[in-house]
Length: 233
Image (cartoon, rainbow, N blue to C red):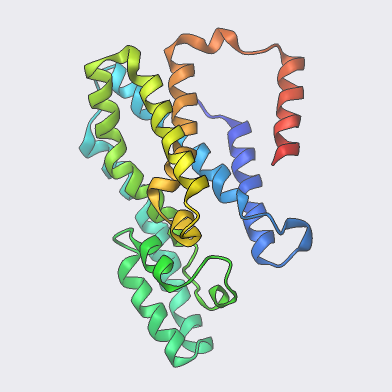
């Protein structure tokens, strides 16, 4: 797909919101919403690529996962290794032990489950968990472990029902996230209550890919909608 500078700008906004939230800026006390934005962007970008390859009959699971590994694993291991000396210097032994345990879960992309069992994301002790931010990467990779196969099967069974069925899955995930009152921590960390955000981007990508680009608003209306979206964020 062609480069989308506006999506890159939105991604930068999402990252900055999370950074400012963790830095303790009062104005950004809701900055963790940047993760939600990032999930939507990821769903849109990855699906745009996968879906175009499926339509052209050039999609390969091996190539897809090789590309994901090449993009994710090198920076992930760099961050892990860079964090080790600082953890050794500044963490108490009990916290250093938990840090070491987290390094086992992170490379296999289940750190969201590990941190969910440790504490809530908004608890005070997350400040002594240097790798807690990897929970969102784990959710994303768990999703992309299953989603390409689901997309391929639905496309081959009935292309016309693809978008409605994915939208229904998204609605179901959203309802689970909103009404999962018994355990807000698991609702925050786990895939089934986060999938709706990724699926929102997925549905947008498929809608545009299926020839609906002509329904885009004129420039002035588009600018108003963009500014409105930024205000909502």
